[in-house]
Image (cartoon, rainbow, N blue to C red):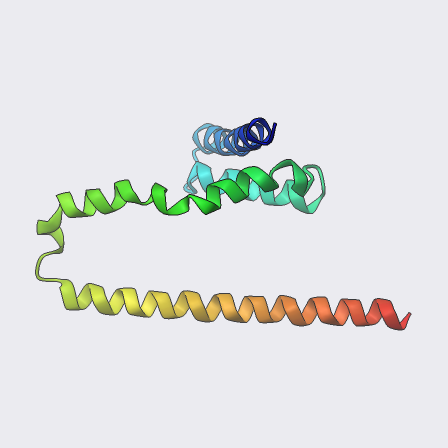
Length: 127
């Protein structure tokens, strides 16, 4: 039964992707359809049009196996080695800088929301 639920939930996530892709092509937007679909899903989660339990297991499954989705990208980079030859140190610093930026922004965002959640819960308990 859990496998069936996971498949249905992944199918719902794919529907959001397809709707976003369709909107992108229909409206000739410069944003990728996958991003539009993710924004639509985010909005639906915010307004509770789609409860989290409808996608939680499927999204968890996809996140668990996320590294498998990057294997084709890695193979593609290896097939085009000549494009990256001679840029090793430059690419190293770009990777290092972007990783630091992501870690700092993720930490600051998590810290902001943790403080916000704590503040909200304190306000509820003091009322």
